Length: 143
Image (tube, rainbow, N blue to C red; front, side, top):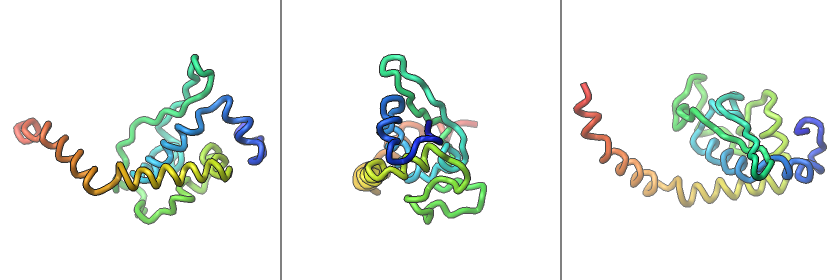
């Protein structure tokens, strides 16, 4: 369906069977963290789960350790275009969803929200210091 439906018809066909909104939120986080080892760049580390209550598929990422500058390809992920984050190879879910104007606008909205809220220097430093205070003693005394 994702490969055969014209972009103009995609929302009507996709929304009843896939949680597009949560995928767009995930995509925004994936982009801002530079998570190249997920679906959109490396076609890796995700599940599609069919929720038995909503009867829609949900995108579930996992193994998100290759983020925040970890790189195996000699690519500067900080300069990659957020509008074309996905690999140039076939990534139909990301490519076709972002081809729909309303979805692309939601994606940019989520990027903006994350940049203004969760990805501020103060927010990240505060969370990092809180985590450090919980594990520092264990990390420094671990043989």
